[in-house]
Structure formats: C-alpha cells, structure tokens
Image (cartoon, rainbow, N blue to C red; front, side, top):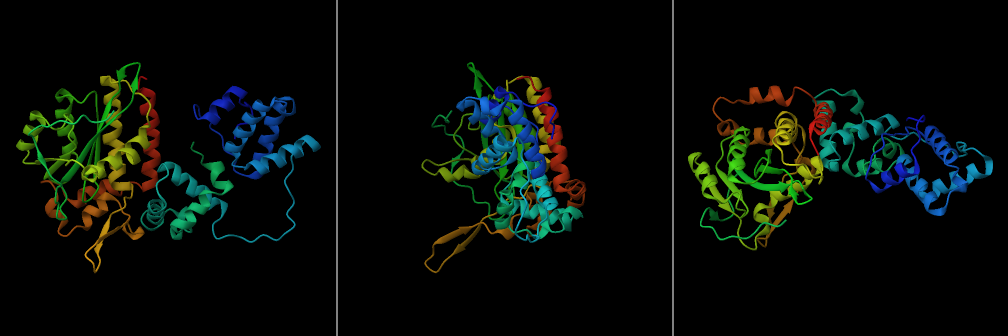
Length: 409
C-alpha cells in the first residue's frame, strides 16, 4: 500500500464511479486503519460538505472492504479520540481451516483467471496442487465451490482483490437452415461476431469467435471489418488453429458469413455450412454465450479503432496467449442430458464435469482419429503442461498489459 501520495477528491470520485483505477491493497486491519486515518486527516474530513464526505466514505469502503457501519464507527472514533486503534478481542477465537495466506492465494488465482465460476476455480486449485505441485494450494485443493463464495466475501479477500447493433435479417439461398448433429464428434463449429464499439460515428474492430460444440475448443481472431476482404483470411487462419478437422460451420444469418466467398472457402475445405433457424435462438447459443463470458470479459466494451496495427497487436496476443489459455488452462462446464421415464430431457452441468477443452478432447473415444495429420497428443502435451494454469494466466495478463500499451485508442 502506498501512503506517500493520497488521492484527491476528484480521483476518489472517479474511482468510485469506475472511470479510473487505483493500485492499492490493505492486507490487514492495521494497515487499513492507518490508511483510513491518513485520508481523514489529509482531507480534513470533519470540515467537508456532505457530498464530499459521501465520496470519501465510498472510496474508503471500496479500497478497504469495510461495510458502512464499520466505517461509521471508525470515523466516529477518529473524531472523538483523534486516532483509530485496533479493537481488543474479549472472546476466544478459533483457527479456521483456511488461513489468511490461503485466502490471499485464492484472490491471486481468481485475479489471474479473471473471476471464473466457483466450480471452474475449484478445478484449477486441484490442478495447481495435484498436477503442477503448487504447495500454496495444499488446503485450497479441497475447497468446495459453495465455501469458495464465502471466502470471496471476507475482508481479507476483498482487500487483495477488488474489481469494479442487431443482425439484419436476410433471405439468402446459401447454407442449410438446420441445427447441426455432431454425434459426439469434434469439428462442429459455432461462429459469431463481436463488435468493439462505435465512437463519433467510427466503427471499432471486430472479433470473430469460433467454438467447437463438443469440446468447446475456442479460437478468436480480430479483423478490421466484416467484409469479404478481411473475413476470408481471418477465417482461414482461425480454422488452421484447431487441432482437429472441421466438419461443420454454423453461423447466424449475418451477411459476413452467408455469402458466396465464405461458402466457396468452406466448400474447398469440405466443410458443411449451416445457419440458424427462425425462432430457434438456441441454435447458435454456445457462441453467443462465449461472446460475453470470454471476449467481453477480456477486452470490455471500450472502442478500439480499426487500424491494421491495432488488429495485428490483438491477434498476436490472441494466438500466442489467449487462445492457448482458453483451451489448455480454462475449465468449461459440459452439459449432461438425461431422459426421464416420461421421455422428457433434463439438462444439468455437474461440478465434476468441469474440465479444460483439451482434456475433453483427449477423453473422447479414440480421440487420436480426430487430430489433423502431423499432430499428436504427445506434441500437444508439451504446450498444455509447460506451465501451470495460474502461471500461464499471470504471463497472459502481463502480455495483455503490453498489448494495451501498443494499441492506439
């Protein structure tokens, strides 16, 4: 925690509203109390007007993780005594199963993986210890998903980790309107586009998201626009990143996919082109779900000008770091369907089924038959297990920061 430069009221207001970030952590109550005291003294809290006091309280609440009642007590204590002191415990305390060091490690791993769901993080914690030998996860490896959410609510965790155009319908006789039937085989892709915002009438870059329905193997590429000039090279490069052969290409009815050039490309690759049916929003639901949980979470909604340099910088990060992370180091949930006695299908996503897309691919019967010529699981293992899930996530975040510095906004 840096105490040499305290934020101004304007910086506090921007931080509370979410328009700026402040790199600050209070690992324990003693440092949190000390920082609160410094802020109150530096800004002469008792002399501030009510709106300004509200800004200070909101800021202190976010950076320390303290609730409104606790902040009120501390501010009242400072006003009465001139300083804030730690309360003396009069009741015996009992050691919990998970120590503060465990909670800090959980917060670090959560931050690296950008807050995945509880079952997904539990799977990563098990792999950190069992596969990659991370001794810091010796107790966390047995953490349940339900208790994980309890730990995320603790002050120790919150001080360490705080985060604060429709497709035009068209009738084009290209592609078959049907829901693909994969029969348990990989190579059935669901495809969708994500636009990176407008600004002053100027379009931003586009992201092309391709997800395999069976394994959830995912490839993302960035393009300057969704015209044929950019789409054909991007789709060719994206499909080359899949380790298995393509069998089906399913998209919505957007003209960027349903056109003669894309149809010709897929025909040369012996890939069937299908498109979503009217009133069947689930036909392309997998890709649309990944748009929000993957791409928006990674790059947000900020406008990125569609220049060749910006697209090149994003694609370098995608291919070198983001795509390997999604497929080798990020767990996904897989649906299990059961048919009851009445013949009704019941879908569920069991916690035990969370696994990486690569592990899912390897688990398929006779999985080697689906790999492209020249590829083997021995070669893919070299990349999959070169680093632990969290080590890769940390390196990916570092490269992501470098990517943002190179992008011209």
